[in-house]
Length: 102
Image 1 (cartoon, helix red, strand yellow):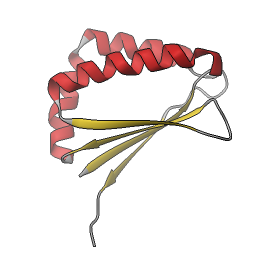
Image 2 (cartoon, one colour):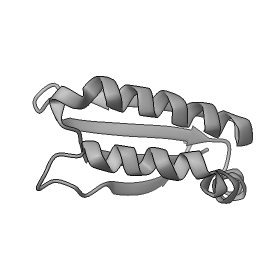
Image 3 (cartoon, rainbow, N blue to C red):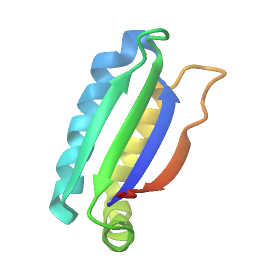
Image 4 (cartoon, one colour):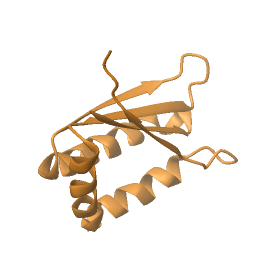
């Protein structure tokens, strides 16, 4: 299993807009790849969010992400998401993980 983790800060008053963007993005992703995404809001800092998406493999992710990024709507949604980020904390961090079973 391959996992992508994103962290970012959303303006708290823009939470509903954020969730609508994520819903629309999930619809696009589902056309190209079988993935499961979870969204977490920090209990200590209401602006901080973590997005975790699980894919079958890194190869499956790589195969699908190129197609997804060609979608004009996904580019528009990313711009909308960036507009919701907290000023001074505009960075979106991204990390990759691979499941290890013992």
